[in-house]
Image: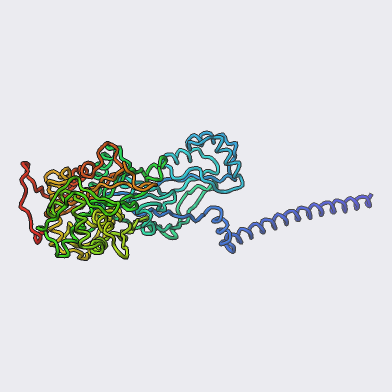
Length: 579
């Protein structure tokens, strides 16, 4: 019994020892786990804290770009012509999206696209992390879409170019593409100046990629520089309205109007027909993109007669008292014949311009020679760039043959055989208007007086202006009289050139002039292409546009009227009394 008792006691002791050992082992393991966890916590939060923070940042903090808005384009008085407004761009990460998501129905409706097309795109690009859903939408629409709370759909701020004056300034200002890069006009010419520099910032995002908070600014965005044009928006609207009206009234192919400040060379208005709306290019016709005042060339016709006359006066062999025999009203050069409307007989130099005598001016031309006329044309800027810096400017053609034939001298004097753009023609008349100084032309508002170059004497320009006065008062340009202001100018009617040469029944009607004639403030050139109403002469089609535009423009510029209601005029200034 004692042996059995002893054996039982030993078994109990063994069982008790095993129980204690198991308990101790479990306790020990438990303590080791606690120690290991504690050490790991200390390691992560104290020893290896930077690693933990970086891993967290990698998953929640991102570096995003900050778009810089493009500089503002404005007119000479600060009226905005092109501005950038904040909008939202919607994009998606297809790898995070379910192409069978029910809410895609509402998404497609808000995006105004086919639901089937949207789901197809998501399936096609399922392995991509970025596709555009719709770029540059209004913030309100973006807010509605983000409220759908669809996984993988995101938005970001961008800028969209807006043109307050629309088609009125389209040919000057131009437009940008969807990435805010200039494509036409001054937007293209000054793209680098107007473009801003993007910035960068750190942001905190949630697990769906939405920005919760801006953390730090790495580099601020630098907006583009502003650009102030020489254009007066009031005159631009006025010119556009009148040009559009005449093109519609005469069912014309198109038209151009340029207005220059006589004493600075600044472009105050420049419009064309047809035009386009840069805010809505869905119906854009490529042929309407051209700024025809600068890119399109034409033969200036009789508008060059006053310039050729200036070349004759400059020689000293001709004066305002000189008379020319134009009988019998035509001249023959081999098989080529030039004609007047009738036989004017012996007429003065002033009557040659007022009556627009081809015979009279051609006789002068063959006497003084083609080089004399060409030299003055060149000094006035014809056949060379204006320096205005506008994309696509056409230089034109100013002939310079080794030896002039009489017929070439004749046609040069009345504007055939050379080509110009409307801006070059306006520049030539600007020199006559301001007393003989050629200023550089500018589409940018000048902050100081320009430095000009004298190319004609004041005496000669004064005499030519008096001839131009007669054109408006009693000659071919009587319909160019601008209300209560005196004016001077010259009409021109030229055949348009087609694929087979001159088109017999298609004309360009031109009027180039200045006002007030005794102390000119503005020079304006009007050209209307292929009027179809039966009237096609410059004095019938272009001159009335000049009259309306100049009358309103001078009033807007606070130029004191010269004519009373009864028609009496203020005292005429002499050549030395220009202001």
